[in-house]
Length: 565
Image (cartoon, rainbow, N blue to C red):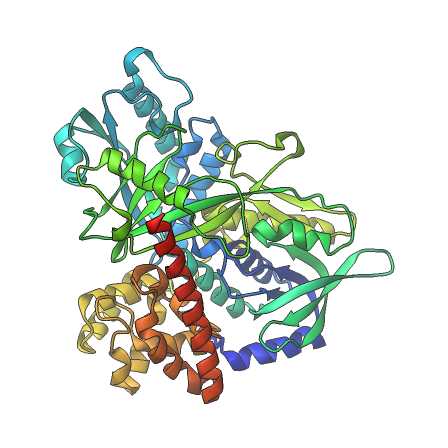
């Protein structure tokens, strides 16, 4: 197993100062992780730095979907849809434990005029069902050999069998089509681990505070600050890639030049409910129509149900939070289509992230809901390469296009090794899965814990099972009704560079989203498990737990204020 511990991080920080790299990637979200992996597999000496924790921004705050983007069909953005469907298929092959097919139910009601955002309508809505059928057929065809299954029509009764909480009045029928689902933070961490296997030197909590320029005014590295102890260091690199999402303009500005990058941040808000309050089976539901022609999803995810998302303007990019209007918008449309009535008090948690929508200059001021999710590779006068736009599903293609640009600069013939590269945890998955299920059963793990471990770690579950074999106490749950266990904390410290309790509670696991108290019940246990792994003093443990508790209580207080508004 490739160690990614606090010790590894210290060694990597030393290597950053002592070596000269071919490629320095700034940004540890899914895009930056994908770029680092692509570069490392192509044979470049790679470094990656992230100012906070891996997947700490948008890459842990998505709708958890790997999809072609049915919402882009009505905008006739066929190239993006095709690209996304191909990448969806590649992910299903390259990370089969982490990405699973998911059925979607699209109900149709009498009176709908613009289902799934169709930009036109017909008198009385007559014929819109046929239009959707054609659109979904096109969706299937564009997936080609990467398709999951063909869509089909559903009767009214079939729709209600899949989604019994839907309003039945005026329900005509619907469609069933297929996309896929993942755990976004775990996907990012899997990419980080895979890149490290191929030799990438990686450090979180390491912020690029300045870009270095050579005598010709070309970017040749960066000055970094260790966010944990404040120490500064420099790293030299022949190529520097800016993969910082909504912060891309800020990073490009470190060159001291007029930025070429233009980002229109779009806030996406999600609500999390229990399955007892919002009944869904194993299929997601598409709410067919909103007044502003956006698409909302009800998505079963692990032990919970996610509802989202919005497309609203920007605010505090560093600390995105849902506001009262966001929550009211989502609840309004949920209650419009559901036979039950959901209230703010039933929301387990809510979260928000910013999509880094690429904004060509002629689209200045455009509605973020209408901006494309396409990506672009840009290069400024100083030679900084910036990858902007895109979405979770297309991270690999974004990385491929970025490295094609770097290969071009180096006079190398581009090759695309990640097309069929299995990610860490996917090795011999079809055979290993049943073996690991048996080992977990023998270890006495409950079925929900076993399913969670296999879907999160794949074949690397072996390492967690060995930790339990060495210390059976590590099989205990962190929270009584959720499948996360103590062994995952040790694993996160040794193999996933978890440096704070928040890293474990918010990104290595999803307790901050799935637990009503955001993991506060498990905080002391997590910190106690991490302390010997990290060499923390009692004072450090107290400081880190206090910081997490303070942040969570701030969020809970803000939610209570929104509920009472």
